[in-house]
Length: 341
Image (cartoon, rainbow, N blue to C red):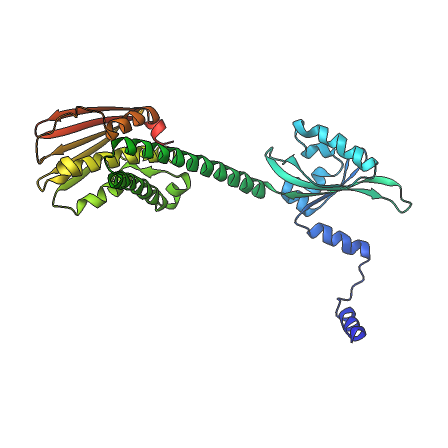
């Protein structure tokens, strides 16, 4: 059976008068990889279709030219080492480097370079196979960047959670109160990050979320509690992944206080939020009217005050409160570049 199978296979090969060398030449010419041969002096002797596609030079332009035609100035020293290896009969495998195209652009390539000998065994040159690895190199760099950013964000979240535990502990009168406050603030963080994950593709790639989207996410749980109104107006500013946890906590704290003591507690309450971009700053005015009872500035520093202090430092923010018997206006200003980072 093996003989029969072998005989059948041999007889199904195409009949051709091509010599083995012609077969090899056809294979080389049809390769997607750049396959180039050169002399020991570094002159290009052959140049296949893959080389033309990769480097942009036609065979007529490349053959006879020095191999440095495709080597950037700052990589010329590599050719000396390659030639030295060739003369020593050493094959170079998967050497990753950079080469230059006809238009001057640089590409990442992986080189495999082999000695070429004549029929007597005499070393006469080298063959070089170059594969474009630009895309895979960019993907590897992108993966590394994503891992670095993930590590940075996770570390920041742990530090933030640790700070929340400490702040809630100072304010809590009971264990249950501590747990409830901490849970509420962690949920606010989770909601903010979930909102950023639902962004359109172009925003999701950059990790940014609009200030309006964040406000709507944070205020949504309070809308169904009564018939109070919430209005959000103004220019959309963008919030980057590093600033998101801090500003989400700040806005959640404002919303929670409003639900406890302010406009979001009253059926007649109105929360109006105005946003504007003024030069390099992002301004947000949080105005509450229709309060259930007159408000006044607190006599002691609580969680919200400490949170505002943190926001002032982390977000390069300025926060001013105007306490009136029938209204509360909080005027906040953030550095736009910091906010979008």
